[in-house]
Length: 203
Image 1 (cartoon, rainbow, N blue to C red):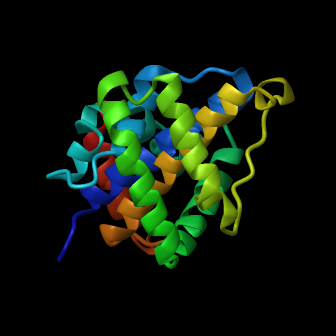
Image 2 (cartoon, helix red, strand yellow):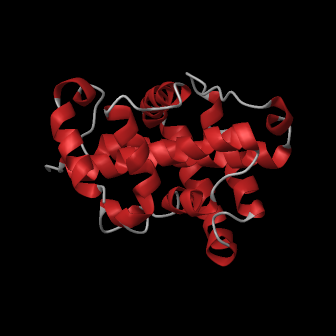
Image 3 (cartoon, one colour):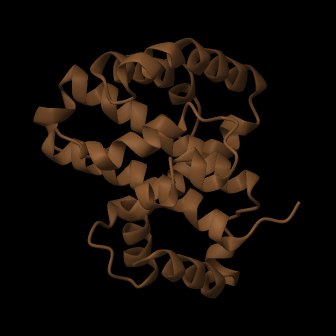
């Protein structure tokens, strides 16, 4: 099956948006709910009818699309974000090759989904459950994603839970990117096509 660069750009925007919120929380102790919710919601939308529907519509990915635009135009103000993205893409490849871990995560998400439906994906209880699931499964794989930030915030359990939940969302977007035919080679050999698809999505 052939997928468009538009689909792949949306998945990459989801990845960028999740990791952008990871960086924000690590530095300030708080996320932007409007940006965090769509990517956290995506964890529970396994059988969505389209790539945009995974995130509740393409409009919800505007922060991630703008972050991607900054990267492709070399205006990215956060040098740690591309490194986090690369580590996430590498981790997802390892995750995809571990059937037991895949099943454990799938079962865990199914178990958390009713609470997310009732309380919302950004509720502290849901974030805690997602964070625990990530810690018990994906975090044991290599390469581990190392998040840098303000030690004051990184020592708070609630902050750690939300970061882990968003890392799980980032891995979900990385998996979607790969399922849509994305690969790291495209950053070199299909850059123009990706930029065109991205610019068509920006206002």
